[in-house]
Image (cartoon, rainbow, N blue to C red; front, side):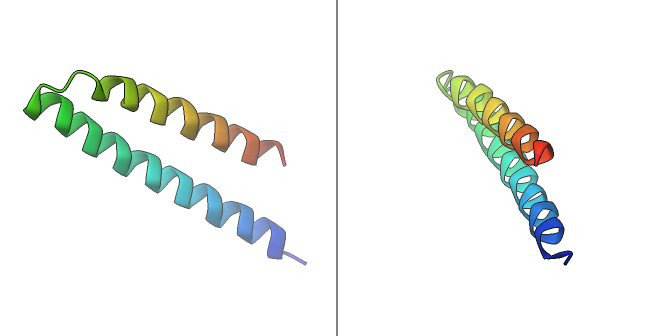
Length: 59
């Protein structure tokens, strides 16, 4: 009976881990290589991760 809740928590943890890793990679590229377009990707990753976590919390 707890399978949907366990899957929701697991997917939320995976989303957060993916978002944090993507932020670290994009931020390093922005700082060390001077690629300022990656800040657009960083903001996009933040917004997408937050929206997916918010949608997961609504269920």
